[in-house]
Image 1 (cartoon, rainbow, N blue to C red):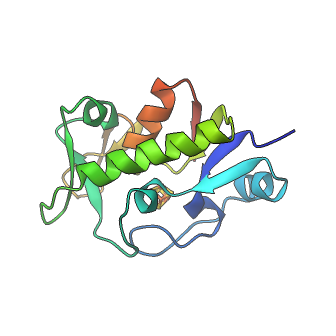
Image 2: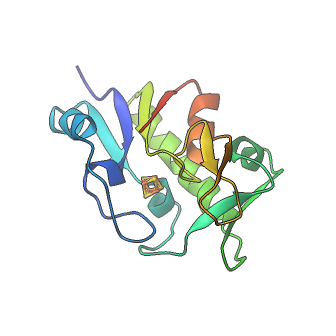
Image 3: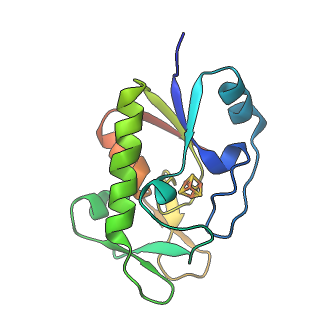
Length: 147
Ligand code: SF4
């Protein structure tokens, strides 16, 4: 049995969050230890540094970003949409390379969130929708679980 899952790297102790922090999820960690999951960080794959300014999706969701109808900016208003798009595409490339059909991604993130993401006002409030990578994964038939 090979790799079945792509997982958010910040769930297995990689300090890749915008603030350099991480959160360990025991189940995800075990999947990686068992060789069943590949950890990735879409924002780092998109070329963003760590730590970095927090970013949110403005004017829609990750699905809208994929269609060019919404953008991703930092709280200071710097647009980082192309980095998020590149991160999503590179993540998908890796998922296809290892033939992963499932993903377990960190909740609420503008890249990894699934179902609910921060609303674009930088106040910690949520809106319906998914992050850019999660949206691309689902569009490509990868089942996304959120943690
Ligand atoms: Fe974690 Fe995803 Fe954010 Fe990277 S982009 S820090 S993997 S939530």
